[in-house]
Image 1 (tube, rainbow, N blue to C red):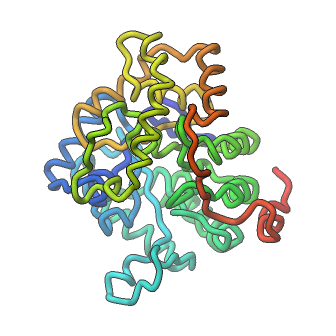
Image 2: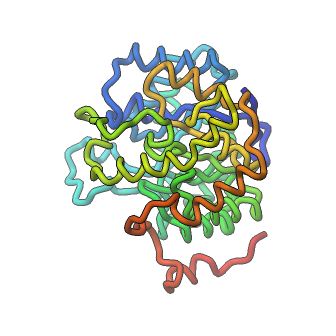
Length: 352
């Protein structure tokens, strides 16, 4: 395993991290605490030291699982968590009223959420505290970022970042946040099959000196190379609700990049998909969806895999330009439209 440093800090993270949502949120199957902790500790044994969670994952369960796994060795692992969704109010029975939980950016709520996360993690400091799924309003909220800076000064957090989601998009919001707020990191969806808006966001990260965390690096599993046309996802797996065309088109795309493993015997397509992301120095860590031990062993060896050659990178660029030979409707992206008045307002600031 190799390690990279979060910009403007001395925090070192493993090139391959562990996204704790898979074992705590119920979207990838159900795990007992013992099963989840076993996977987390196995990841550490393979050199994975960065673990990414959020206070909403299992309504705090992701954080308590990390405490169970690493409370006695907190100086040996780096933990990133997120805040912003007020699930405490939702737990009290208040009406949800929308698909996402309500977000709360009030300074007193941020402090409350931070303290609750610290208690669940059994830590005095959070290594990376991330604004969970920034929107137009949160980018412009001065009090939000002033509170984060004060938490840094008080030693409650070491660094802060912004995460984009829940689905793909948020180009304007991510760009504006990096320009206006100078976070240490930004977390995005990015992979070989879904390169927009990841590519322009990474370009902005280079200009602003922001580290990039990549989630969904295997395009929800397509790039792991494990699926066939007969694959049926179990109940409780969010991919069960996707149209069948998603699977069929993904398998067609996969065939066009098989040359990566053919040219590099002993590697897997899952490893090479991660390697492609790590060829970009601005990417600090990739967060594959880990839900069984064999994946940990496979993905953790990505650092040892040979680099993708310039010729192979060029071929991948050409394939991406033609959507890997598959005709399908263009993806719809979330967030402020780039040509809207809101976008002009968000982006009306020069890079420091």
